[in-house]
Length: 207
Image 1 (tube, rainbow, N blue to C red):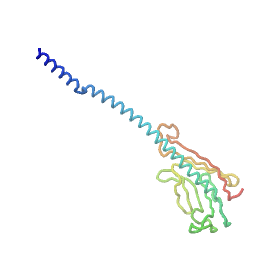
Image 2: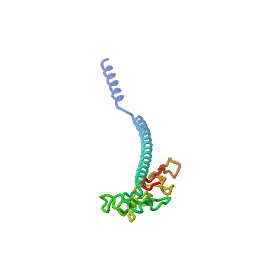
Image 3: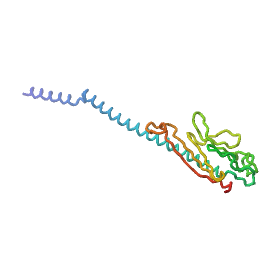
């Protein structure tokens, strides 16, 4: 009777040991498959969110660049013709539909003193126009008649000037586009655009 009880105890003990041995191969495969599905779903969500964030970031950067360029142009064009010393010839030199050239007298030859009666110094003969560099169309600014274009904003698709009242009222329109196309955007080959328009009345030209 005692031997029978001992055998029974050993059988129960062995069964308990087997039951506590861990996952079977089938259970491990199922767990791995479920884990891969979850990871795949998480990766898809991350990819979509990253794409949305990148697209929004590109568009915000576009808007900021266009706004900064417009603010700079309107401020400087508004000063066209400034000549506190009675400088002759200060004003709008060239008024084209895609560029503008104007002069003013704001400093001396050294660029550190008051107006000196001419428009030959730095930042006194200014031109805004579009140019292309490294395959990117940019809004350029020349600070003197012989200067080279310096970039004000990149990825600018169009720049137009419209003139009224003898060039004393100037409407500026600037359109930029994102640096990279968005495959989900159906227009303009995927490039999102942003257009800004402003009217400037150079106060030194008179009406």
